[in-house]
Amino acid sequence: MDGLIKGLLDVAIGHERDNESQDERSRSNSAQAVSGDQDHQRDERSRSSWAQVVSGDQDHEKQVQSQWQGSGSRPSGRTHKTEYGGYEKNEGDERRHGYSQNKWNRKKQEEENNDGWETVGKKPPRRPQKINMDHWQGYKRPPSEQEYSDEVGTGTSIEPSEEELADFSQACNRLWQLDLNRLEPGKDYQIDCGEGKKVFQKEDVAEGSLFCYVDEDIFRTKPTFARFCSLLDNYNPNAGCKEVVTSEEKQEQAAFIEEISRTAPIKYLHKYLSRKGFVSENYQDFKRMLTSLWFDLYGRGGTSGSSSAFEHVFVGEIKQHCEQEVSGFHNWLQFYLEEAKGCVDYHGYILPRRRGETPDSETQLLTVQFEWNGVLKSVSSTLVGVSPEFEIALYTLCFFVGGEDNYVQLGPYSINIKCYRFGNKIGSVFPIAE
Image (tube, one colour):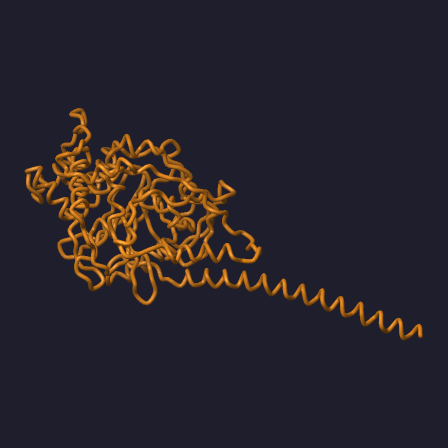
């Protein structure tokens, strides 16, 4: 009898232990499934090859990729990520442009539906931040009904010297000196570069957003910044989709050109190009040329009227080939606004070629990797804190006077301004650190 009782107890205890073991295996399998789903999502996002600048320049992209190979990294100065919710924009913009953030929203929803399981190292949720855009609506009025800033003071010399006329690099450096609206790192804005990586690495190594903050006063005190930003939501980011430009958007374009034409960099650009014989000495003709060069639509991706220099260089486009990829997108203000909306996910900076040149919060020439609306941009370079008028002037000067490679000095930075022509238009233009 004692043996029978002992046998029954062993069976009962063994069955209970089997159940516990099965629960542990089940829980482990559940966690692995959640982790596997996230790894799969990460792999899916990482499949996208890095963007070609214009059709046929894949070899150039490979060259840039090889240039940015390096080693070493810098620990992040922050322990959490400051991420933002959407900022205010006009209702109906997404419907008019025919795109949405469904892909991005699905990713967020999948992260929230993990039955209580959380992946180690998961980024914290975004904190909402709204950017006041109310006064931007006034930019849609006819230019004659708008108020502009005063012309640049006569104390600022905008005449190119003989040395600058003879040396293209000196002219570009002069534009840097004339950028009176350039922001000061640590005062007007704060960035955290986070961790570094190589171009071919697709994983997200950044613990935080790139932008910790930008002083919102700049959008009131520097009208060229606000007018530039008001143009950014006028475009369909899907490459190959025909753009629809409204009369109000044309007025925004004209008002932007009028505003920047009152600044020192644009006035210097006109003086320089007219002295070289590239443009008319008539300033009104010059402004019309700028509007045409940057905003006239042309075909890209097989569709006429689907792109422009402004859209490609500053806004960015998403190519819809076998695999989606981000093309263009070389402007820091666009990056900041899209990161504030939650549409940009910063992945880290690309390691520089030279050791000891790790970027920090003071650096104003960055090469980074990020996702835009869930689509990877493996490498993108941008000048941080510079004014819109400076970039328009610099890139226009390179288009008229320079070639495909333009090795110049901008303040402390040795840069190659890559400039690709699209017939008589700007196909793409962006900086590369030397």
